[in-house]
Image 1 (spheres, rainbow, N blue to C red):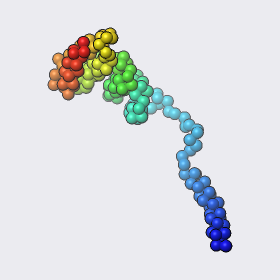
Image 2: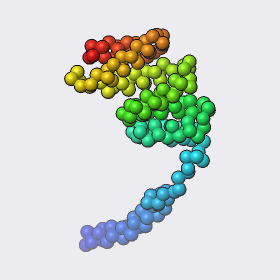
Image 3: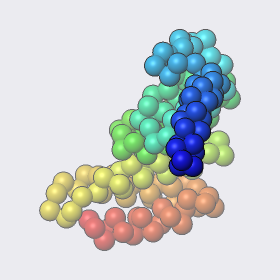
Image 4: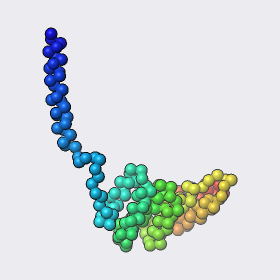
Length: 178
């Protein structure tokens, strides 16, 4: 008889637990199946766009980040945010293995800011984009040749930069490869 009472007491507890679980659902955010309207990129500040792009990079979506970093440049030209976004676009494209786009963004940065403190990094990204495309010896060696030229430019133009030593090492490796 005691087992029958404990079973009935347990059954009485089930509806209480269900009600409390359902009540707890009211604290969840809005329905996950409905999307709130997204704010147009044109209506966002450059800082908002920049921060969302950094989140895209952190989420492993560098190609998307590269495209929207370029939007900062389009929407807010000549701003400090555009300057930063240009360089971040080059980095994001490189991370996403879009090497031509990376070179183009880094080249634009160098065209606009040739004497900037980050110019060595932009030049290094250009060289690195060629270097990362070097294939085996039996293939086309044009990327190896371009990497050599770009790494030499870094070594000569920015000998005191933090990228000069890495450029020197990559230059020697590319030369051995050629």
